[in-house]
Length: 257
Ligand code: PGA
Image (cartoon, rainbow, N blue to C red; front, side):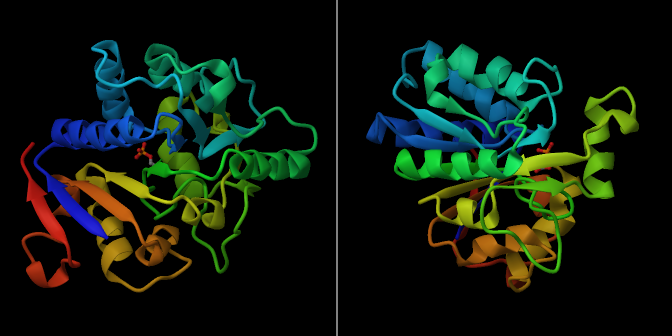
């Protein structure tokens, strides 16, 4: 794992965008896994700006999103489909045929999950996946549990996740209770992982994720066994790791810009 501490959210977003755009420049037809939530918004803004300046061209890129509420209409302003269209796919000029999202309107969710896995495989697997982390350690909607599911699946959100996501809805009861998410195996098969962690509210979980053992009650801790992970940590999120050098995993550096 390469762990880099960023002085603030702006720097984190810039460095994340640099990493993604470097990979796109190296491989025009990059297959990119993407996350929603608050954390990657700054990165998306930077990527759109780089694309507008002609520094990176996303027209050849294929994207697969990590997760989507179920059931939800694509047109619903709370859908992750709308979030992606507004914040990234649209302004970055990614052709609509190249973007993929779990089917939030499917009648047969088992088939929809299988189809999603097959689409990723047919695209050649993900070259890079960008992840955020939930305060309970979830990645995608792989929630803490005694066991984790490998493949894309329908899952029930925990009360903690529903409460965290209620900030985007008028009322907590409006938050969908279910979602389709890539499984832990789907994520682990990505050739490279970029984990973005911002804010002091993530300080506790990121310490447990990076420094404890691998355990299913912290799904993100499984990333410890992935061979190619970069973690970009805003300083506030690293406060329980830093400056306590003893708690710091190897390969950690501090970046200013
Ligand atoms: P956040 O969500 O970026 O909005 O904190 C991350 C997550 O829940 O995975």
